[in-house]
Image 1 (cartoon, rainbow, N blue to C red):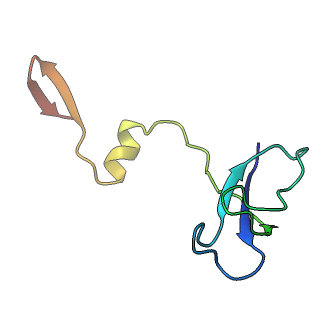
Image 2 (image 1 turned 180 degrees about the horizontal axis):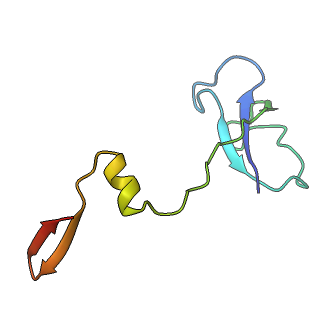
Length: 82
């Protein structure tokens, strides 16, 4: 379901501020009035959120190329540099 931003039709409301966000399906009709104060509202355009896909986990060689120190666990509580 998309997230819609509703803003007051006239000046900012003293009770609600600059508006409110509402999660609703695209089939539902848009709000005509604010549910808190009853002032007329308009649905503002929302921007898509960019969420990049995560790549595969880094390999030991790529971690070393990135400047990380790679450690290997030898025994309980002891590590050595790889």
